[in-house]
Image 1 (cartoon, rainbow, N blue to C red):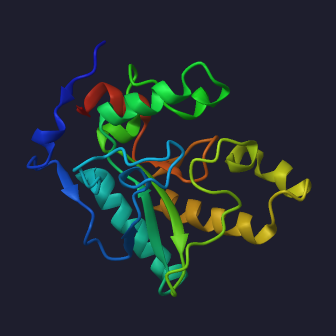
Image 2 (spheres, one colour; image 1 turned 90 degrees about the vertical axis):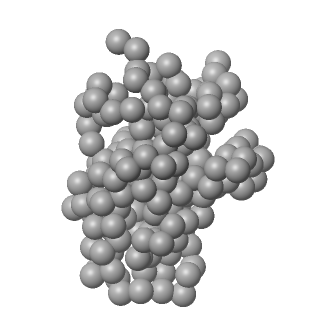
Length: 204
């Protein structure tokens, strides 16, 4: 079944999509709005990227509040939020036909980011210091995969403090209704991906 789409230009004033720029406990550090990403240049153009569907935004606010309770002064640092389909196609073209294709959703299926229902996020402490999670964002290695964490720990490639920070992030996000994926410690989805693709608008 083809996905139902909405143009990015129409989303900017749509009541279902809201800005997360002023959300308490959140810092936006959107990597595809800069050159600090695996492509190596800015992908978002004039779009600032700081939008989510209101359901995901509400859950993110809850996760930030939970983190504050656990670690006063800490914040969630958002690395990516709503990602238009036009940008997803650029990422897909870069990895298609390579071993890295497993890390980028085929735009024909629709990335959950393109529905405004996924967020990439890490932790920063009360001094604004981004925390060491064992890898950088968009690291295409086994070390970035939650499914491999115990093996990486046993092999000495992941430290206990790095794992504890990942577990803290995961616990805050899960308590707020998000769930992670097996291949990326930073990626969280606000609902079941099948339900999202069947019921929500994909932003082009």
